[in-house]
Length: 252
Length: 177
Image 1: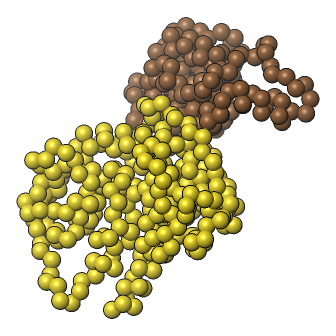
Image 2 (image 1 turned 120 degrees about the horizontal axis):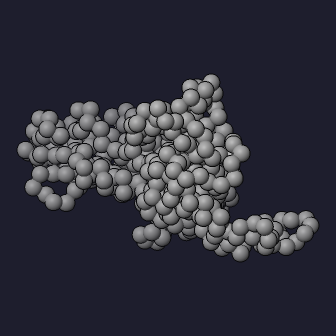
Image 3 (image 1 turned 45 degrees about the vertical axis):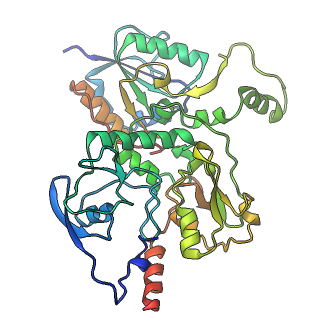
């Protein structure tokens, strides 16, 4: 959980972090040794696309959209989990990376049923926005069209696995911020599913506090509030930095 | 100057993309001066003509007739545009793909019907097992997603093509729209 503002908050006795020099996309920059390449890039207004990343939650490195290239290494690395070293030369937007990112999006779109036109999150969806940002006009892979049941058992919320991209923000916010750990992952690879408690109906979960944090951090229409229709589900994420800042202040 | 020969059609779709095309409103007059609309649900031609310059195809491929039409359109058109989400992604029509075709037919024609409990056999083209986008069958030259694509994007597409340019359509529309 080295990314949460709470744990990054400097403790009085620790020495100040080392400052390193590095190069990103040809720009000579400096950054703290305890900040990820993604954070340093952002501070310098270099945009790297992300999906599973959410400020305030631990890094996950699951979506691979933030992959960057480091000189001397053949394998691209996720910027959200990689820390800089002195003299590192990083490239964030090569043709290869852009191709990878588009392929990742195409695989996400083809793996579940992302029918934007009839989705509660149409117009407010991070996956949909990424498709525009990365210039994805169509999907070259065959759509799988899996048959996935919508879970409407909860009194206030709906889980629609058809729209899930397995970013695991719901799992992280529930465990790390709410402290309930209602959400988890079942299965592996393409059969991975986000589940509540022991893979039971959400409405029957004993651990869920119905706080709704998972719904608000979900980037797509996979988790939504009951009673919202097409394009009506607008997520409110400002609670997360506010909540974490309040907790940090109290601790000091 | 020769007028560009334009054809438009819909396959497994709702005609919404054509509504958006009509929403170009008075600028249609401007476009009309530069084109000859040789085939369209909006005109009275029965057979898809030869030597079409630009074909705008709305809708996915859901039945045998859609596929036959699409292959003919491809053969006889210089430039084929997938117009809207159904043509580009198969969209809503493809929601039946999660079910077996027999299940879908049984549900629609017997389980929820109040009379005439039988599957249609004559005068309608047989459904294909899966609904798929245009590029699953033929080469597509340009993709304009959107449900429907905004009329602004369709106007941009057509005016660029008529000016002899292949337009960059990124950021002009999006899936879902």
